Amino acid sequence: MTVTMTEVIEVAKTGRSRCRTCRQAIDKGALRFGEEQPSAFSDEMQMAWHHLACAARKRPAQVREALSRFEGDIPGREEVEKSLSEAEETVPAYPYAERAPTGRSKCLHCAKPIDKGALRVAVEREVEVAGMTRAGAGYLHPGCAREFTGTEDLVARLRKNSRKLGDADREELERALSE
Ligand SMILES: [Zn+2]
Ligand SMILES: [Zn+2]
Image (cartoon, rainbow, N blue to C red; front, side):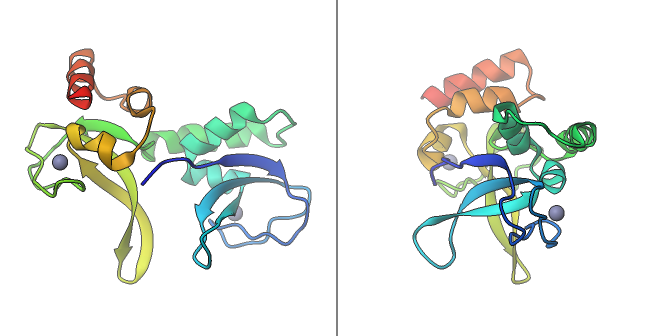
């Protein structure tokens, strides 16, 4: 799994796209947020579109990133910002690192358990629940994380996303990642 997702915000050129969050049509001329996803029907990537406000609630980290690159006007910007800050409190930005609260998680890479209290790296993955796919967290030993994710800037991303870790924990994490 290599994380090379492309996210954009743009003005909808037609009224034909449908929001993946609320399933309603996205009006022509409205702002929409798109992220590249593997297509279920071919090897090519395709764009999945959301209303900007819907995406802000669901994928705050990606929308914040895309917003910083968008140069046009954002109608209802205040509302978007409000949804973003609310969602950032509850929706984790992946990948992030934390101390394992229990000893029950297993590493996605080596399949060995992750000790309670040990540092672990959480990544987003699709999980099947009762026939529906939904996004959930998967966990990795820091030493397994780089190989598993293939993410070049893993350390930088973890530094940004792991707000709950103290300085000593961060140092320990970065040492473990470079082993
Ligand atoms: Zn929507
Ligand atoms: Zn492992």
